[in-house]
Image 1 (cartoon, one colour):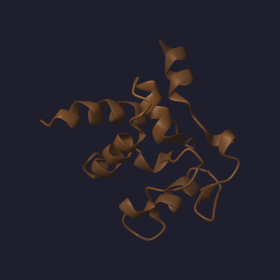
Image 2 (cartoon, rainbow, N blue to C red):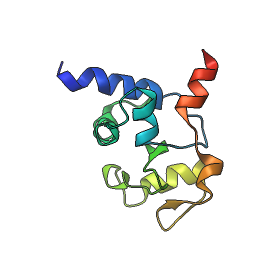
Image 3 (cartoon, helix red, strand yellow):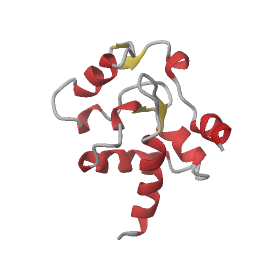
Length: 113
């Protein structure tokens, strides 16, 4: 187990809770985990999650709603297609009405506790 694998597992636990039809950002997950400067590391975790079918990596986008992780999915538009199948509107590789679809783990997961 690498030093990062513990952090990656925490990222996966948060990502697994993103509801169908919602998205969050790398930074939002990093903030929830108490490491707001680690958004890039969250991205690395999402890239490494290919062997984890319970991690909906397609629901994690950048802070502006851009599908920056799209190149890590098989197929040219797989990330966009997965989101659209969940009812998320995507145009020009960007979530439309981002605030409508945004799920904030800081708010949502704290309320569950």
